[in-house]
Image 1 (tube, rainbow, N blue to C red):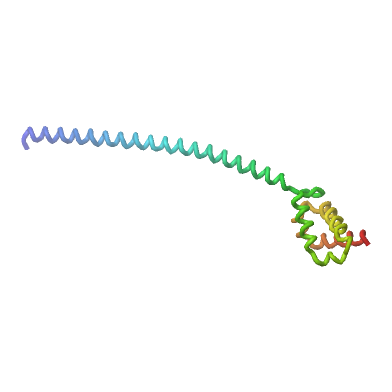
Image 2: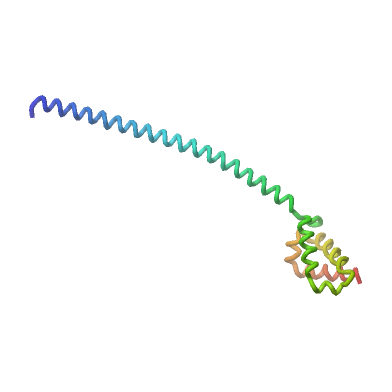
Length: 139
């Protein structure tokens, strides 16, 4: 190989190495920028998720407290559902004029013994005893 061609080949190799080195530096720089972008985005998402979670918890607490029943003090919603269901029971019409009195007695005793209409509605034995107590009080 001639000396000129050898110099040109070395020079081309040098340019190629510089080019590859430059590309490598750019790719590293790009990777760093992408990671920074992802971190910023993740931080924003974490912040947004935290705010959203706090909002969900706050809303849930408000909704729960608005319609919560406790033993001795049922929510109006529970009382209305109780009365509506009792009015729909045909067998209670045998109480005649005392049907409403019996329902109110039954409601007050269930409210005193159970934390919610749902709980009362799942205790057939306990409600049976209360129903007989109200019947005995009225007759």
